[in-house]
Image 1 (cartoon, helix red, strand yellow):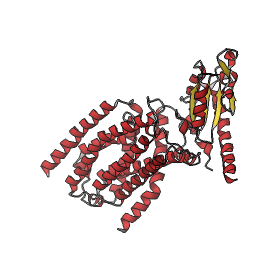
Image 2 (spheres, helix red, strand yellow):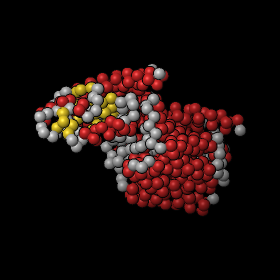
Image 3 (cartoon, helix red, strand yellow):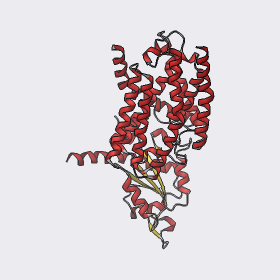
Image 4 (cartoon, chains in turn orange, brown):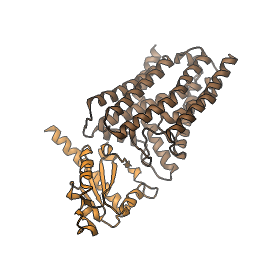
Amino acid sequence: MLKVSKSPWLLHYDGSSCNGCDIEVLACLTPVYDVERFGVINTGNPKHADIFLITGGINAQNAPVVKQIYAQMPNPKVVVAVGICACNGGIFKDCYNIDGGVDTAIPVDIYVPGCAARPEAIIDGVVRAVALLDEKRKNMRKEAAQ
Amino acid sequence: MKVSVISVLLYLVLGPVAGGLLAGIDRKITARMQGRRGPSVLQPFYDLFKLFHKQVVVVNDVQDFLVWGFLVFIVFTGGLFFAGGDLLLVFFALTLAGIFFVMSACSANSPYSSMGAQRELMQMMAYEPMVLLVAIGFYDVTGSFSVSDIIHAGSVPAIAYMPGIFIGFLWILVIKFRKSPFDLSTTHHAHQEMVKGLTTELSGNILALVELSHWYENVFLLGVVGLFVVTNAWWSGIIAVAVCLLSYFSEILTDNIFPRVKWDFMLKSTWTVTMVAGVVNLLILTMIR
């Protein structure tokens, strides 16, 4: 059966990450992990994306950016916070300039902890996000029917 | 008449199927060349299905209309070609479709989209002379612009008379298939300096229409490749399909070997190839005929 989840297109945004998690996110696309075999494409364009991967915590500068990217993505969409900084601020949590995790700006569906998050963990997060996409699609249909 | 109606219907139905499969095979071969497993061959169909089921976000009404224009004129182009129509009209319709696409990108007030539109215009400027030379070449060889006349012109394939024009056409196919090194306006590779360009502001079902148009367009372009080989013998059709697949593979290989170039190199090299391979071939043709 054809499902929305058969073609999850990613958008990767680096909030205030140290690049550790970003390198691991890109590692998922390399021959060793090759997430493209699941149809995953790194789009770089919010209007084309289904899954929003964010690395790094939220601060005053990137909060509006994250909100705008989230708003530009068409439904159904899933947000995945990659790495401990994106989950709750990590070691930067108590810094004066850090608001906290991604969920201080937009609703987060999947949390992938780790410092840096390992590619296996990221792929696991994406797979869970993909399952959630189908669910959200169903809910969209139900809402449209009502 | 009957044959042309059937072939148009076949193109309308099987065009997207073949185009989607070609795109899937492209992704598989590309992945294997990079040492990856790659997605399923049916992946482009999954993508299309997904795009049709996304939320509809309308940037402006004009854009949707223009993308529909792109699809309609691409289908018209291919339909006319497979009906055995006039090759000149086919190529003019192709240009018109391209203009619709550029206008749709221009209509959105977005820097990436307009950059893509400008680059697409540059690409059209680069490949358009060669496209016209192809039509003139076929006329010189067969004495007709009509595709059905060209097919039934004789037992010697047109490529025997115009190998230079064929090489020139393969060159511009890189631009038309949006393959690296000439994928300036929009690309499928995420590592380029500007990725989506033309299609930046398109999403959901409208982006799906663009994908669908590209599939129709690719099948039509491979049809033109086949026209170089096909003769009035029935088995030439098989050779034509083989040559089409071979040239498609060579485009994939090119895509994976060369990095993107700047627009001025694209323009200069394409016009040089057009002059050296195309015009010289045409001059020789005119002299021996």
